[in-house]
Image (tube, rainbow, N blue to C red; front, side, top):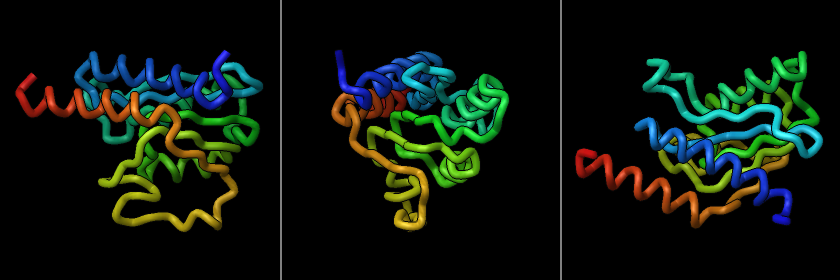
Length: 150
């Protein structure tokens, strides 16, 4: 059996692949409570014509509905790409216990982007680089296809 981080990140990767198949940026997310997935989502900004339809935002809403509480402090969130500032703000407000992500997002990421958050002040535990090579390949392939007009 895969270790905790890789096992649940693999489910987020599957969600990201679904997004790519729908011509959305291939970002996927799952939220886990007591080693059970309670929410899963992928980017839907084009489908929903909404700038806030990021995988994390959709999954947070699903998880809150599932638990009946907006406080998700016993939950872990797995997302293929480093959250943007908007998504990380929502992750903090939901009080997510731990955040696991695969690859950095140098354009809009909460830590590696142009306006980094000071991590030492956060209550959420952050783990990076989970299934990084696999996710990087998915992202690279997607954007190469887009540049070729596909």
